[in-house]
Image (tube, rainbow, N blue to C red; front, side, top):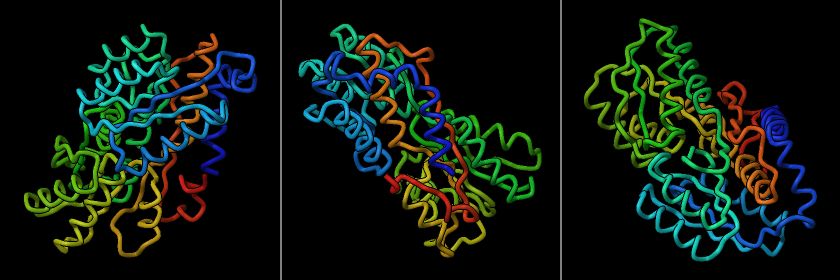
Length: 315
């Protein structure tokens, strides 16, 4: 059910561009592609990379794919894009460190005749953007938490790196909590860095500062897993955790009685990356999409429905 929903949405919104892939032999060839993501240690980005590689090789089995990790360092990502330009790649799939500050690098690549497609997060100046509807994802997870708490309790929004995806998730979460005047947000501005270690460190700080915490929204699954571990180590029970990603590790946590993680709003990094390369290849061949921003829907995965969830590993 989850996979069918995502694929149907992806096909519908990208129809104009996908027509070009079926005729790639007659169009401009895709000889090389550069991919830069924020964190090569995050399984989400690894799946995104694999999705982009698979689609690129479907278009041209001999395509050269170069993958780099920016480690959330804007200057490093500028250098990576410069290297892609020097290598004369045909397309850049960009997971931007900073959606606005990356614009000069994007414009430089486009001036060199390279198509730039932003994936997962926005990037100013990109030819197209493919991302999850992150406002929806944040609202789904936090709406679930509010429901679990019956609209009353102390909650934390465990923030993350200041990229558009995270900002949108926090916006969606805040809107869900704002519907319940008896929900008190204890903290919403700590950057847990999008990692398991960051989530664990942030959660340790929350548990030290606050005597009563009823629920925590983490902006991605690695943070949620780290937060869950911190709660176990400090023997704090009764805290409900929710996040965004629908990653394999969280699938396992949702099936375990030993985890405080109760929900995650799903993403599909594989389908997202495939759609990005499809759009980019279409643009290379003069097929500009009617809407350059594709928002892929999110679905809430919980303990109750995880058995039917076809997640990232289904690829």
